[in-house]
Image (cartoon, rainbow, N blue to C red; front, side, top):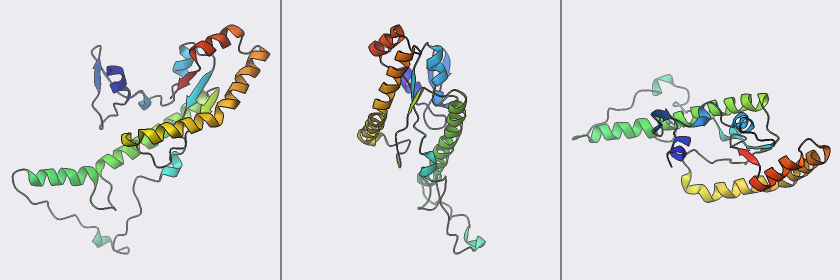
Length: 199
């Protein structure tokens, strides 16, 4: 269970997990689509699942702000939060973390969007240097990092993406088998264990 918790421990969002006296974070920080890890473990055919495929369609960190029709003086600091017995602190933290109104992103939104941008750039670089044998790219559109409550939708999108590509992947494996690129021993092992998937 600790390994699963560590696998989604994003810095600044989820706490790191201590395993064997080492603090573990999400491996996506350095290798979002770990094809090289699969190959190092002996995989002969790697199917990658790239969750950052449609990153460019998800928008930017912050929308265009309407600062009172271009008046820079309209961008004044908000009024101090007033309250007693810690209420002011809670209000201030809420405003800073989640934003104020619809035009100002909070710290959490900025951090998540920044993480997604960095992860996308690392994934592109890694995929260019060590491409997989096949790539499944679910179209996640407006899915966000914290949309755990939409797990059913995510599973359906992943299933649809795999269904789109499964016939082509099977045909390529069969072609490699016939040409001797993937020998029968490797193919039988792949059939028994299933393909190696990097996600």
